[in-house]
Image 1 (tube, rainbow, N blue to C red):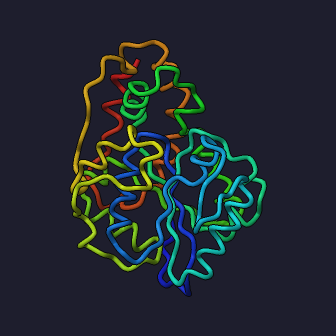
Image 2 (cartoon, one colour; image 1 turned 90 degrees about the vertical axis):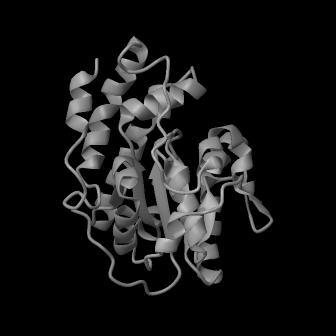
Length: 264
């Protein structure tokens, strides 16, 4: 069971890690709408993909340098830093740095991997097991738990769309942030920080709140053997993470069993 933080003693860094296509950008949009956080969009993914990430006019070109800059921004910027990132890359340099687990409060968002895989494959037909990202997300989760002795908060995207207000309130409780119900809705529109991967964030740009938006895909884990194999490899990591989801005693009945029974 995750342990809520009851108070915050000053600016800090909160990370949200997500396998791709798990509604993490919609969650990030809600965190932007709060107005009390400095929000960074996928800094380590952008670094891995493009070779650098810019903070306050400085181009950071290594995971260590970027971690230094994020921690410094939280110390000097006067308010908490929140970043969301994806686990389609393994960040070996971060995992080897003790500050990564001790100076950042880590949280996670996950989604039924059958849905995430179908959505991801539609944009990336070369999808690999590591790019699906649940195994790498689980590795970060376990590294944080081992280093801190605490269980990080996990948001299940199904819970988020079923009860946005309740899930957001639970997340605020677990991170020590004040709850901001007014952040649950916003004006649709592109964000400058999303332009580096604009085609991946069109749904989030069109959104005005947390809503169910499930696409129909020609290839799924039920009709494509390669996707079925990816699903089988990633499902155990999802189930282990989901066992720690926040609000599990508050929100709905378990829905994954029926889906898993239909998987091939």
